[in-house]
Amino acid sequence: MSVIDWSVLALALVGIMAYGLWRSRGSRSMDDYLLAGQSLPWYHVGLSVMATQASAVTFLSAPGQGFTDGMRFVQFYFGLPLAMVVLSVTFVPIFHKLKIYTAYEFLETRFDIRVRTLTAGLFLLQRGLSTGLSIYAPSIILSTILGWNIYWTNLLMGGMVLVYTVTGGTKAISYTHIQQMAIVTFAMALAGYLTVKMLPESVSFVDALHVAGKAGRMNLIDLKFDPSSRYNLWSGLIGGFFLQLSYFGTDQSQVGRYLTGQSIGQSRLGLLMNGLLKVPMQFLILLVGVLVFVFYQYNPSPTFFNKQETDRLKESKYAPAYQLAEIKHQNLTTQRQRAVTDMQVALQTDNEAGQDAAGVVLRETDEALKLVKTDVTKLIQKNNPAADTNDVNYVFLRFVLDYLPHGLIGLLIAVIFSASMGSIASAYNSLASTTVVDVYKRLIKTDSDDTHYLHVSRWATVGWGAFCIVVAQFANRLGSMIEAVNILGSLFYGVILGVFVVAFYVKSIGGRATFWAAIIAEVLVVVSWYLDLTAFLWLNAIGCLLVVGIAWVLQRTVTR
Image (cartoon, rainbow, N blue to C red):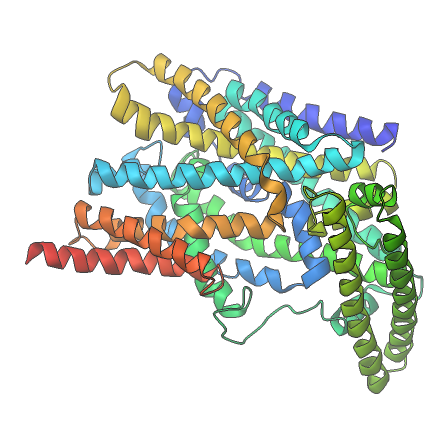
């Protein structure tokens, strides 16, 4: 990166942190620290909710997901708008009227302390692990750009966010989210525009979409009902609905966002704003990845996008084998460029037969290139057993560094960093609030003053920050980060949602039946995932329904 890039990056990050700390000055009570005094308007709530979900994983891995797998991942979000409506009608008014700090306080009122503690514990485990992945994602950037050790980079990234999270609390997080989303929206739109501009002059945006479609990358909607398929309309609408309902309705990192609203109406508007904007936003981010794929149809592409590992390979004893793979890759790239040129001519002359023929060649070449990449991956593993061999997370970063103009490189790196800071900060805050309110204040020290709990909240934030940084040190073997995060969430969210569904809608079921149903359901969900019985999105619906069904059976057994 150039001096301009570093200047833009530093200015953006320092500006975001300074503004958040300035606007959060005066946060002296536990209510201010954890809920921002419930003083924020709807647009603050909406942007904060979006920024919490849109981590660095979104802006690193999602374009790579679009590059390698096309647009079908967007179906993952199809259940989100409906989930926002359900939350606005059911969850928001109940949480606001109870004047709670965390979602899990409600469970003790409805059931008992065991159910509250178990559900809070499941959240803490899931969110702590997921936050470790969110720290690892931006660390990839620094380690790739600067050649830094990934472990020290994780420590730097996780520690930097702690500064304003510990100092400013929820209000600092919410104000920084506004700047983060503004930078993210502008930079990603500009990146997509420049990608199209860098295509040959004769290739329009519509032509680029046609090429992507013929190469199998515009697979937007899959109507086939297949439980083993990760992304189709039904898994998105049903499994995605349960996942989003659980994430936004029971995950304290999100509940804490909309509890900061000035009123029930402001919180509802913020959630509905998220429901309207999230799917288009994710669509555009994936589309940027698809456009990068089209760009590489006309330009040479790397054999492997993690440049750090290929540079090591060139200096190793496996260099001759790597050179042979590079030659194969170059020949296939030339063949692909001829095919895409034929495709362009066929498109301009409305020659459907020519389009189909060129499309077949493109897909065959794509498969052959994947085989070459597999060979290179094996060489990398032999040379460095600890290497990150899934380069989905590096595709967009490599494109940015190789082709985009200076200044914009720094801005896009700032986007990824700021998005990461937002989601990590929200996670730290939610972990601390749940630990203090649902564990420390309820089970350990129940009668202290507000100042004491405020200090404990800050120390809990530091403690969870350390835990998440440790988790980040082991995240390099999990493949696509955006998939890994959602798989991890699916292991817990369905069960947590099931507990809340019973609490809200099945008044005849008590705490004892719900407690044991949650434990049994969690074991069954983990076993189902381990045996790969179904695609991960369905685990959210399965977990929820298992809790409701098992609790109903147990309750009837107890009352007989």
